[in-house]
Length: 471
Picture 1 (cartoon, helix red, strand yellow):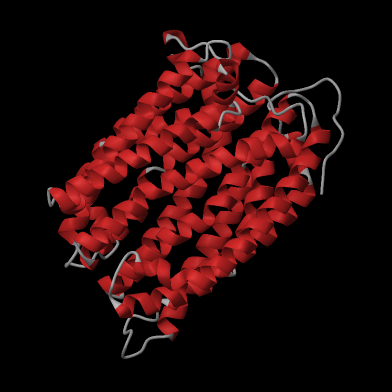
Picture 2 (tube, rainbow, N blue to C red; picture 1 turned 30 degrees about the vertical axis):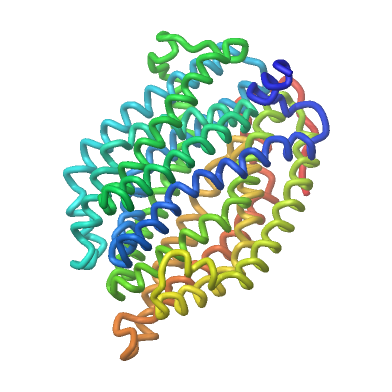
């Protein structure tokens, strides 16, 4: 029994055995874990919307693009670390693996200090940049400053849980997330419904839950002495490994920065339409977060699988694993689309009782539903390239679809749909532009994947040329 528990909580070598079994064993706990993580923000929104009101829910939604913009460096470090961990683990290079993890932890600490030092003093200016409605400004400011005060916990949880997943261990992060989610729900109810702390209570509950998650994941990593060697020496930055991490991670960071900046502009457009539209959009994007979970999960799973197998010089397994995960992802996305179309109204009603917001939300869900299959394609083929170490394509594709297509199209459609009901334009403009960017992103990602340059991006240089993989 103890041996079985250790297997579940330990590293998973995905360079042997059936690819489908490897991927499912890794993906299912990861999917449940991502679901639990999404519950953090969703429970906040539901309880705030029900107990405090639409304006408070609107305030939380207003802060999201700002928070994502400030967390760009976390994305870069996490992406680069995940690739390095998977490939060095697959190649059985324990010393380099350990130093890669240490470098990442040091960079997360430095980044967290910078984010707090810059983000907290600038919170008010950033909210004004997004045209935050005057009715919700004070609430949004309180929520944002509290979240940023505890951002280091979020950083360490994300980087260490990412390391564990890169080692093939998605079960322990799942258990941690389930525990943290239950804690978050309990604290939300206590702080908001019991102590009447409003949005400040929601932010504080999130920080405490993330702190518990971070501590537990770090403790688990320290105990995996058979896989990694964690000590003070690995925390000293290594120029070569840090450069490698940044080379791999910065494209993802730049991609996130571009996406986040575009979201700031889109949020400004949304805010100009009034706090009820912001409330509706916040609810819809919480639901969208759950709908996206399988796509992101399978993308992370195939990236880890590809990284380990390329590190072990098993390109033959990459092709088989890619085919398996693509079938699963597409099937899951189609099933989710059907569920959203049937139960969309019920989902919106969890956040608000305002009929006008509910009707608008149902229409926005229907617009987005068609895009989830496209996102599945983007995540799988993008995940394959990221796992191989080819992170640049996602950056260029994101720049084009977001900066070149989504933002300009959202403003154009809003201008064309101005009316007495919506003087700043129809809210549908925001979601139609997002849908088109998803579809184009899927097309370009697949075409870039077919070029095959990702096969030559491995960090591990093998003596022989491996068999070329492709779909």
